[in-house]
Structure formats: C-alpha cells, structure tokens
Length: 228
Image 1: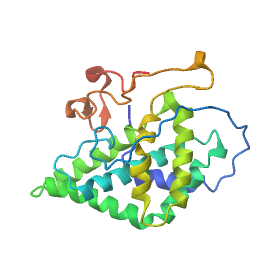
Image 2: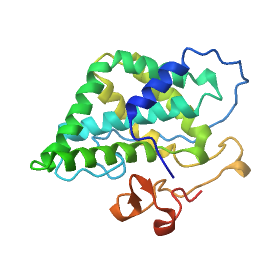
Image 3: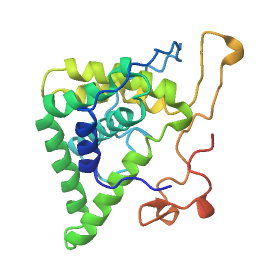
C-alpha cells in the first residue's frame, strides 16, 4: 500500500482541484454513531499516528494539529462524492485561516526529530519523512467512508469558525471523533444495519519498523493494512 510522502503535493492537488467545477450530486442520508469523546492532549494512545517518545507537551500539541490537518486533507480528496459536506472548501479555508499555526506545528514536529537525532541531520529528515507518510496512512478510511466524511465535514466546519491560533483546540476537542470515524460503524437508525467493527482501526504492528519498507506497508510480513 503506497502513500504520498509530501503534504505539499497533496495541498497543491487540492488547491488545483478547487478551481475545477464539479457536477452536482445527490446528498446521502446517514445517521452516524455518536463518536464524541473527551478532550485530549495528543499523548493518549492512538491519538497521533505514531508515538513520540519523550515528546514535550508542545510537541504533542503540534503532532495533534498536524494529524488533524492530515485527516482534513485526506477527507478533501476522498469525500468529493458529496459536495454538500464541503470537505474540500473547508480544507482550503483551513490552510489560509490557520496558516501560521500549521507552519509552526510543522516546525515543532520537525524540531522533535532533529532533537532525537542531534548528530545526524539526514537520519532526522528520514525519520520525519516516515512520520509524515504514516500520518496520512493512518487516516485511510475506504471501508468507513460515510462516517469518516461526515465527521470530517463537521470538524472542518468547526475549524473554519475557530479563531486564528486556536486550531489546536479543535484538534484537542475532536480528535477522538476523527479516530473513531475510521471504524466502519454503519447506519445507526436501523438496528439490523448496524455494523460493530473492531475498536482498533490501525494494524497492531503499525509502529513496527519491520512492517515498513521505503514507507510502504509490507502486507506479506505484517498482514493487510486494514482488516475490514
């Protein structure tokens, strides 16, 4: 399973795509599972896509911000089947409204890997690139597209109304929902249609270096990336 390595390329693709008119599509009606949860700091298990040993609170906050930005980026690409969710427009607005905070978060995370590799800048860059890849990979939601897109639309709406400099608060308040939306819960209005999936959307060996080769997940060694 290959993933894009550069968030800049994703951003360019989104901005380019926003200039192309798309045909109108019908809305879908779907009652999602209530995924609301407690506020988090980023240090809690599963809230950021890769554990960050010895990270400071500021570094965890930056990671939380960067993970939410990645989630909204993925949604902007995957959720255009329902333009009414505005995942594309919301993401583009987030890039503008919260530009300074996003750039600061990027620098903070980059600084974490430089701090962990003080004598080897190349190793720090490689570790940082791998981290970026895994952040995106962790938000693969093909099997849970409806609930993921609905949640991303709601979170994106909160983000564009959040004052500049407070994107991290949106991440702290709603990352539990974004992570929960990676599980294909299914329609909740009708009992017979509910689908209770595994509570852990990521492979158990997601952080195992031996499961990755050149930033590509190794299915043969570690099993399929998504069990669904």
